Figure (spheres, one colour):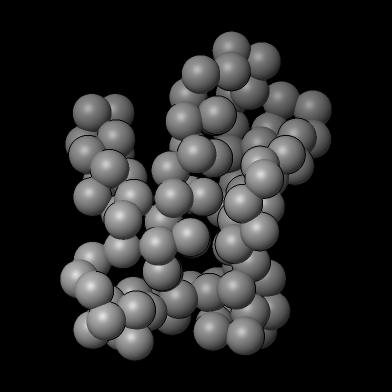
Length: 91
């Protein structure tokens, strides 16, 4: 399980369940969520015992997109650029 409270992970057999955990903000992507998502994807990628990942959101919405308040306060969330680069390396 990850230590980031904005993204929770749980291993179920060979599957990594990744839960976006900012229900009060409809799981909008801020720095903590972006960093937690990157850590979860890296965990999935580096663990040969895992064969799949399931991404879900806590609360009534999966993900409302970028946290515009956080974005306006300081640019794109730290970790988001790294997450996007990681995604590009895998495709």
